[in-house]
Every structure is written in C-alpha cells, then in structure tokens.
Length: 112
Length: 116
Image (tube, rainbow over all chains, first blue to last red; front, side, top):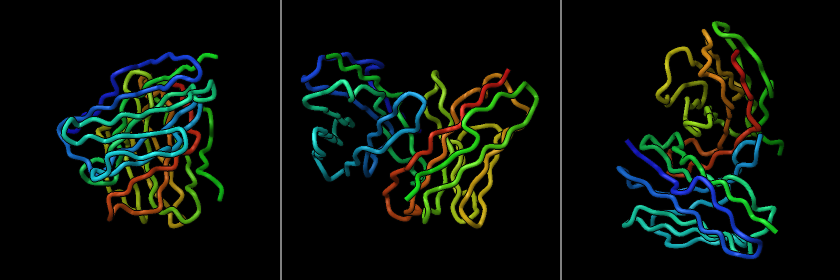
C-alpha cells in the first residue's frame, strides 16, 4: 500500500528565512501531490497541487517541487512570517482516486 | 459560497454509546469524504460518498458507517464507542467526482469527539 512520510515533525525558523518541508512517498506513482495547511482546531486548507509532469509550482511565497524519480516533494515558504506558523500536510490520492492519503504533517513555528 | 459545515462541533460520549455526526458540503459539491484525525495516526480516510453511494472505504471496523442523502448532505455513525474513537472527525467535499485525477478536498472545521 502507499506510504507517505514527512520527515520532520517540527521545524523552527526565524522570520524572514525560507522554510523547506519534505514529503516522501513509496509504493506508488501518483499523478499529483497536494499540500494543505492546518491550524489548531480547524480543518486542513488546500494550498497547492502539483502534477507528475510539473517540476515546480509557485503561488505567492509558496513553492512546491515534485521529483518523481526520488519520489519526493519539497514545499518552500520564502520570507516566512509568524502567521505562517501551522501544520503543513502533504497528500496524494489513493489508487481508486477517491481518497487522499496524508502524511502526519510538519508543524512549522516562525519566530519574530 | 458557504464552506463545509459540520455539526456538532464538540461531543462527549461514554463507552458503548453510539454517535451520529453531520456534514453539509459546499453547494454544488456531490462528493463527501470523512476522515479521522488523531495525534498518533494523523489523518486517516474513513469513507467517501458520491450520489448517495459509498465508493470507497478505509480500513476501519464496521462500527463506523455513513450515508449520503439526495441533497449531498452526509452523516457518519459510530456504534459501540471505544476510548480509541476519541478524535477529530473531518468531513470534506469536492466537486469533481474522481473520473479525472483531481482530488482537492475542501474540509469542514471538524467534530471533536471525546469518549469517556
């Protein structure tokens, strides 16, 4: 079955720095991968989707890369701000295409 | 458009009881999925409904069940509650029914269930 791992449970960085989060997956070749943000007590919020034929995707200060050879996605937040502090989840679709399999998330803390 | 709504937001039950959670998807969304989130296991898929039919089910015991109504609203039920069922239960909806590979989910705020 598919497995998805986010290497770090927690990441602490200073305001203005770039945060880089890692997501690795095995036993699957997904057509796309997604990143979500979750704040305490709230449901996840969709951020970005990257397809297998896309190497990189950007949205404002966010950048996602997708390396299907390494089976890895990197999620970058540039010029990080304390408001970026949250848990970030990566997710890929199951083979039926009707469910998402989530990593356990990386909790990012940005200090001023 | 209004987002996904879930009721109730908080619930306290005792072992052995049963519980029903409700979810209203975004208007126009016909697919509803349910997830369980715990600190140890993270977000885990429970089941997905489309047009009142369950299309996919995660690896959960039969005590967990659900249904979808003709207006796309969905309910999930957990019978004979166990302590380990304490979790945040999240409902998510999406418009594309899965015939493509797009699967962006729009989540509700969740129902926090505590089993004593």
